[in-house]
Length: 284
Image (cartoon, rainbow, N blue to C red; front, side, top):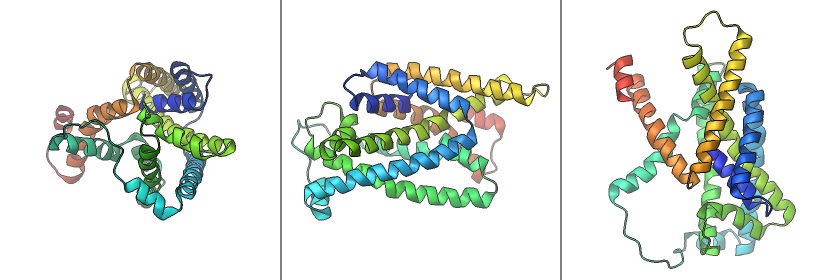
């Protein structure tokens, strides 16, 4: 739901003809169709392509922002400067700050796209190397939108919707063709996440719920059950996206409600001999 909402916002920010609800609907249709028609291999292939577009788009905007700011040093100084004056706010309690950091970080350890790639690897060595390489690339590439967000806070301090800061910044520093590339990069980043989530959800529903313990079901029937499960999951995500206030709220809910329980079970199961299936179920 968070990713479909984000995709809808990107489409709406890139077009004056689309309102947010229409853009979210279009985003949901596109994602549901191409995810249900593909599979894990299609997901991995498109992710490689989308990842390349993402890196190119972020590099273009980062270089353009640095050039307009007077070079890398001046841009970094601008990013690290104090934000524009706003109304004074009450400092967050320590536990709230800790939670704000823990949700996106710990919530990503057992994320569907990470687990599904690991389970689909040909051997443990491939899964290990890919995980370490992917984590390193994630940190390196993730610094670019962080840097751009800090710049946007300085240049567009009066922006009402903070989640639109990156597209607005890109639109202000890039020519039309450059912005098209960047918008494609943003959409690619979102698609590469949401299709993984839908595939994971469809697999769990079809294999662990609808067809659990069934040995009389043909492979073709299993495939179509999984596809319909992906479509159903996508429709639920679309309904949730329409009702959500912001992308960040949906991500916090997903990480706090789902991933936190899974993370505890996985860590205890991997590194201790305590408990069993009943203990894991109760903890979750």
